[in-house]
Length: 251
Image 1 (cartoon, rainbow, N blue to C red):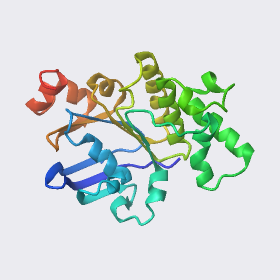
Image 2: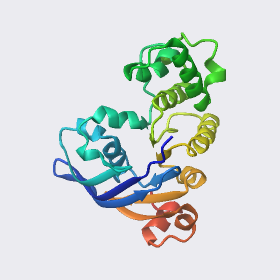
Image 3: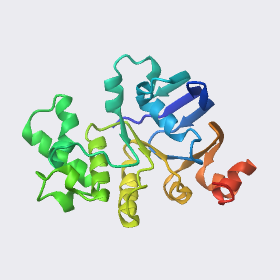
């Protein structure tokens, strides 16, 4: 799988007249977990939406600046569906398609032209294993995905995101609605996956970012306050605001 980094320059987003991101410049290296932390409404989710251009669905949004995935400026790409096949997205709450577990994972590849049952079988099993779900569902793949528990549905969502072998995986508060044991299972999976792809992890759990990420960016009030290696940012940040946030003095 290709190693793909992300380069962001002077990215600004407004929802109507309200700024959501202000002149953000940021480099996300390939093949690692990159953490993004900050209080609510600081621009974290907006940044993810810009990466895979789901920001296009927000009719009030205006975007300026450049955002490159690999060597391609996503804002200039005409085939946005191809872009979204390269960039997987997992949202805070599981979004199961109203179909079987098998078809949830096979849906994207089928839409991309994969038709042979044997090829789909291999792909579905691989993705469910990567999402730490295969052993729990392998004997009931015809069950509706929406019948699974919340934690299992979130892992099914992860398997579906992985089914198109993305270059980049964006995670937006993936553990907000699941239990700690399941969260730890998914974290182990992410550490393995980061060998193959670039993972952008938005989380309000600062210790989760500390555990998983090699580099972390701290956002506040729509601005990038500080970015650096995880150990440095958590122990000797350059900005007082960063220190106050990672130590829990502000939230």
